[in-house]
Length: 216
Length: 39
Image (cartoon, rainbow over all chains, first blue to last red; front, side):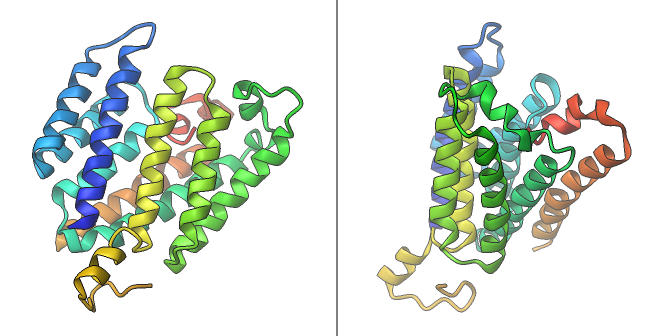
């Protein structure tokens, strides 16, 4: 259950951040109320709440903003809403691998990301080595895909470094900050769960030797 | 549980379709809905 609660409370924070993100835009929308309601519901009841968060992710993705962060929120909400808790780490592993493999592929294809232009547009430090940073980001994502396949906890520090780095480098306004912290915070939690780090301390404390999900 | 396999198929299948769509269309797809999913 530790994974379920970890993801559920993360989704409460993420949905609340989405409510704020949508509300502070130049054209605030009624989606803010939906996100706030979904966050409140998820704080009260796990499966219906996470389903509501997933539904808000899907609705935002279709009608408001076609975007990877709302899509990720949808998958993660669905995981908690429909899965047996024992299945969550395996699906989180597939989700994390998919995110990193496809993110790397899209950054490499066409090569426009590797020029560093996307980073230069956002980062306030003139003269930053944006091209090297772009290559480092892609290398980190490929490395994370491999480490998550291997299901080693070495993925966690790399994920924290990459995702905190992305939030710091790519946010120059409140909206960016809210969106990027939601997405990147969620990815850190997914990597934690996928590599077993979300549950191991609880199992050790209880002295449970689980054959289903051995401590890595 | 069967829902596990449905969710895995969706999680892997959807980006696969979008990536294939981007690869077989021209660069204008770069700015489309499919690309924004990953940007």
